[in-house]
Length: 90
Image (cartoon, rainbow, N blue to C red; front, side, top):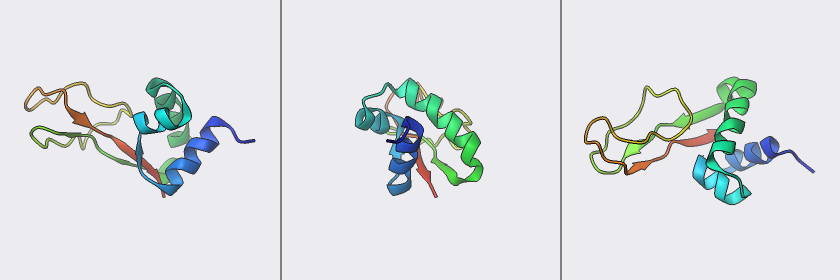
């Protein structure tokens, strides 16, 4: 039997996923997943790769964002249609 973090790491080793996709797959809340991702990021150091979130309306990429949660609003067009961020273990 594996822990939640081991299960998340196994999922991310196979494919890129957003926190919401991980939460849906493991029946967790996105906030819980982001908490576990923070621990994985510290323990795996450079192995956890993040593809930044992107605005679905104007295409703005949140490339300098350090937080693991999804942004609430685009600073460029103020849209709330944000996709990502996506995580993967390499």
